[in-house]
Image 1 (cartoon, rainbow, N blue to C red):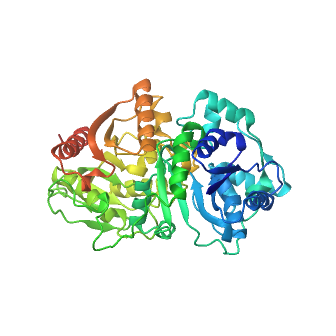
Image 2 (cartoon, one colour):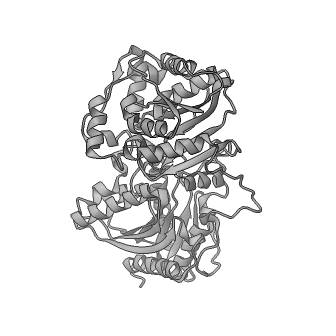
Image 3 (cartoon, rainbow, N blue to C red):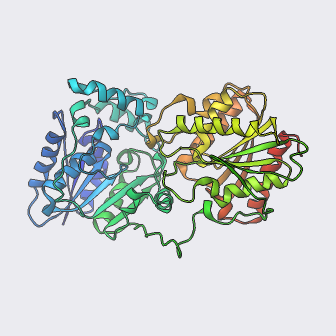
Length: 498
C-alpha cells in the first residue's frame, strides 16, 4: 500500500489538502498531512515531517509531496529517512539541493532581498490578505474559486522568517531517490518549457534526464489542491506507480531541432551579415547612397549565458533580418544579456545601446526605426512604449510573453507593457499571436490586448491559429508564411517602405 505524506507550502496547512487527501483515501491510499505549525526554523519543520514518516509501518511505500516551500522540509526528511522513501514529488516547485535556502520559494525578488536583510532578527512573514490580487503575488490563482480562496485566506498563517533563511543541510543519503515534478501550466511551467531549456543545455534540466525522474502537467495555477483536487490526486497516484513523462537526452545529431534553430519558413536572399560587437547588420544594396530605415530584431529568453549558437545566429532571427533587408530596410540582430528572469534591466540597457549604435550608422535613417521583440523579450517593449522617441516608428512582437510569468517572482513595474498601453498615446504596435500558446503566456497576451483596447492604443493583431510558439522553424504552412509576410509588411509600412 502507498502512503502519502503531504507537506504544505507557504502560509497553508492541512485544510488546504482536504479534498485531495479525501480522493487519495477513497482510492485506497493512506494519507498523512503534516501540520508544520509555527515551528521556529527549517530544521524544526524537517523534524515534523520525519515524525510523520516514523508513524508509518515499515514496508509501506512512502511518497513525500512538497508544495512550494514544503519541498524543503520534504527533501530534508527524505535525506534523514532515505531507506523509507519510495518517491519525492515536487508540486509546482523546482528541485532543491544541499545548501539551498527556502527564501527562493518567495516569488518576489524585491521581497526576497528585504527579507534577507530583516531576517537576522527573527520575526515572521505575514500571510496575504483575502484579496485575490494579494494571493496572486504568491502564485497563479487560476482555477481557484472565490469560496476556496476565502477559505485559504481565512486559515492562512504567517511564516517564520528563520524557516526561509536557514540553509537546507543534506548528507546525500537521499540523492538519487525517484522523483516526480508536477508542473502547473498557469504558473508558467510546462513540459515543453523543460524540453526547450534542455535544448539550451541547461545543466539543471540535464540532471533530470534520468529514468527515475518523471513529470506531469496540470492545466491550472499554483494551488491545484484547491483548483483541481481530484486531478491532483490522480496525478499523485500515477506518480507513485512510476508513471509520467520522462525527458530524453538531446542528441545533437539526431534530435529534432527546436523551432528557433529550424530553417526559416520563407525563402529569403542570402544577404551577408556585418558583425559589430553585439550586433549584426544585414544591409540592402544601395544603402550607402540613401540611408535606409532599420528593423532591429530583439530575441527573447532567458537564454543561458553559455548557450550556443547565441540568438543572433539563430536561423529564425536571421530570417527576419534578411527579409527586412530584402524589402529595403537594414535588418539587425543582436545578443543581449537576458540570461535570467531577473535580468530584464540589464537586457533593456543592452537593447538601448544596440539601438543607439544602429542609429549612428551612416547607412541607417536614424529617424525611422522599428523594434521587433520575440518570446520572452515581450516585457522589454514596456520602456519603449512608455517613453517613445519620435524616431521609433513602430514596435512589433512575435508570440511574446507580455508580462513576467507568475512563477518568475519578478514584479518590476518597468516591464509590464499592459500598464503602459492602458494609458494610451503609445506608438503603433504589431502583435503576432499564435493559437498553440502555453496558457500562462496566452494570459499575458490577452491582458495586453485588453489594456490596449481600453486605452485606445494602436495595436494590430495578426493571428496564426494553429501555430506553436517559435513557429517559424516548425510550421511552414501557407497561413504561417502569410502571417510573417503580413507582419513584416505592416512594420515596413510604418517605416515608409510599403
